[in-house]
Image (cartoon, rainbow, N blue to C red; front, side):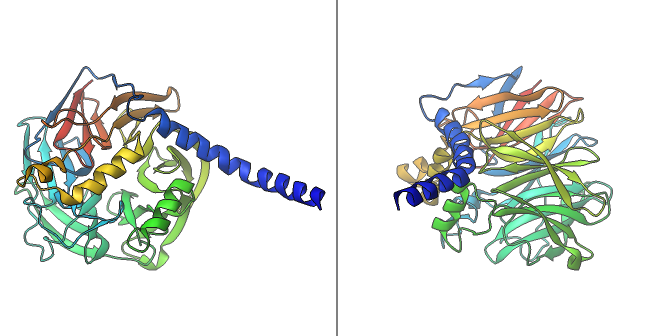
Length: 391
């Protein structure tokens, strides 16, 4: 009997050891960046935070380099309603409305809100990932609306800084959409990430267990807006987050649970074949690719701090009592890195968070870079303003 128990124990250890080692790598990275241990890094020529009094909670950002502008998805309402982190309140008041902002960084250095007021549902708007089909000025936005998550499709009029709503797209395979990527201009074909299999609205506990266990519950879905019946799951990724086409043959997918980036070969039928995983010293959030082909990764070095910020934000009111104003703070650290096949992974920024005046980078979620103009930006999931760096 003792021999049988020993054999069973050895077998269980053999089966579980790869998973245990994987969790050790992920959790040891988090512990290494805990308060008091995090070492700040800033490799930029300059870094400042702008527009602290104008925007906050900006999750995603994309560049439109030919116009010299950036588009940001900002949601102050994330304080009260966050389907990913599990904040669900009946209070829909923030004193600020969510929306898409146009940042003209090349000429006027101004922010302009994209006018979507002609859309009947514009008040139920909680934007996350966004992408632009420049050939048709079609903007795709993941919306975690209170009425249900969907992809909102708009046509942008750049002359008037307004957008006309075209369609609300929902699909059974898109149960937890987070980020998206366009496959060819004018095609309506997309890759969309689902961050979890078990969403926080169904079970906050099971959703967190899925996250910290590293279970591959997240997914990447191929969607053709014009032929939704062809949709299919093409990859399984633990807490799948940002998705970005790296080049003509490969797709990169950020994992916020694995703390790394998965790389896939894109097949002719849009299915994906896994090629490799690059570990990062931080959970990975959104991705971007600059004109030199380098992959920029933003993320959260100490996830417990981000969770603490998200939990406290339900009581945030920038114009409220001292306690309500304090709840609007953001002390979660940030990380920005870049990767290329030739040079590997480099840390560009490691920041402890944002102070009461809005200085510093907190809860970094996206980094983008205009190589030609020598400028880049960092958006912040719960921070105030936009991080602007010079290279």
